[in-house]
Image (cartoon, rainbow, N blue to C red):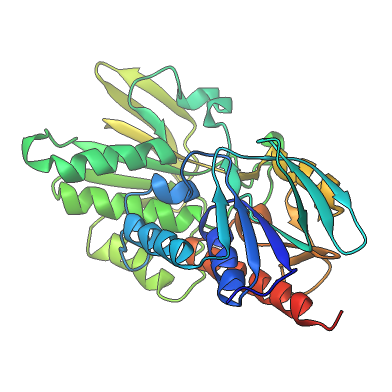
Length: 341
């Protein structure tokens, strides 16, 4: 049964936002869940699989959406954005792009993240050479291969470049994007699962696999799937007939490398969305030097008075972390709503 008089606004319908809305709604409070796209789910809609358990993202999304539908107090508004937010005595007056004005007692920002424009690395030929794609685009290719493997000619070789934009002061993103090591390992392992004879190369600076089962996942990709990991940042990608030539160096062996592949997959840095900074300004939340939502508290969910955040708008997180942070933000809202007036 819904508890009258308490409403939370959740901005963003990805895993973190969905989980926050579900938990607040299950506690009996009203929730307005705003999603700017026509379908909620964020990057779940584009992923072919997840790590480290090879779950189907569509199964997870379907389950979360069914939970939203079962909770009478959650109102999902798609194709909708927040236009403005104004402080009130007990919360905020929020204007939506639909023209609707709503009064809410708390806000959860779960706007997610963007991917760095890998075209800024002109030496890799993205947008110029056929066969050079970013990691999100490659998810669509994996879906296609998975559905039509029997009538698809396997590529001879696929190369993956990690840290394209991450840990690069010249491009303005010196931080590690955290999730790239794992999704690159998953993508390479999936290629070998679909086409066992295809050679896969992962060019890396180092491997950061911090999570339960993550180190084992990467090790299985290398040892069981026989994906070759090459330490070094590639210098150049050049067309070579209908293939691509990679020039790099194996920094462990100290040897120059030249190899030909059919596809190059660029793992771009995770960067904040511009609208996150604007929403932070509206609701009095803090952002760090890059534009991610920030907090001085140990818990990464509270951004300001009656304003909380969860998921990739605070820093790159994987799906399970996004769900956990969404639940944590919901717990903060529920605790706020449960206080005596």
